Length: 340
Image 1: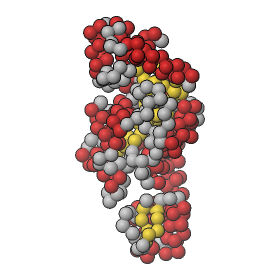
Image 2 (image 1 turned 60 degrees about the horizontal axis):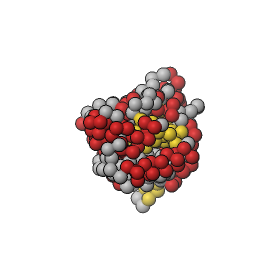
Image 3 (image 1 turned 120 degrees about the vertical axis):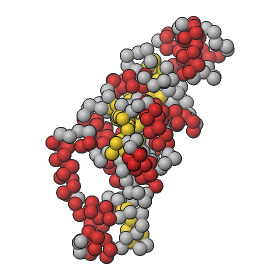
Image 4 (image 1 turned 90 degrees about the vertical axis):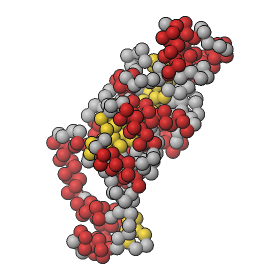
């Protein structure tokens, strides 16, 4: 613990990040020797002592990159966080990790596949990492938590591990703490600013061996995460979507350029008979609905035109559209129906 204390003295000093920290350690040989050279050391000491006291009261732990519990993939990243704070089950960090990211404004279909992937990976021994944002991130976490056991998911957050954001995810946060882990490089109690979310995205990419992108605009934070993943040599996958939807531009462009491999679902990674059988059953069960979804996009299509496209009667079309509307997959607007 004294070693962690000295490392925190350095890292909590204004103007010192991972790069300067590493320079100081190389120059002085140890965290203790480097800490002793700091200016205003007494004030920093008080700050660190208060933080560590708060951490202890809230069952928050510190892991340095010299500890065996530190995530292996993250340690390989240049200028990684020398110390991370952890809340939850530390054993989660020892599993192979897949990161699943995408837009906060995901469609119902995007939410569904992110959740299915999260569950499939968790059931296959992976920890599913994401940023705990609403939309795709939450779906990946929730899907992982639907699997049995513990240590299924990792939430990489931009603020302190005790700072819950967004507030809508408070319930999810506590489930992750109970059955997974929340991690951050920031001090306990820290309230994040915009630049911290970019760093969070960096570690979401750094902690995994596989990175899967769902729906995402070209200029989204999720695409930033992918760029980090490419730099780190991660295996990149992307889930395709309708080309007229701006949320498809990110993944579709990656697939088109060959940067990302095509991801159509869990069977791309786990080709066991159960997964294939379950997917076939789901396809058969929803065959009519899926054919309608394929015919819909962002431009309204009338019931009569839909009936001609899928070669069904208008009465059949209407009943299927009701089901899809209740599922939140389509919406009735002027001129017909659109896919959400």
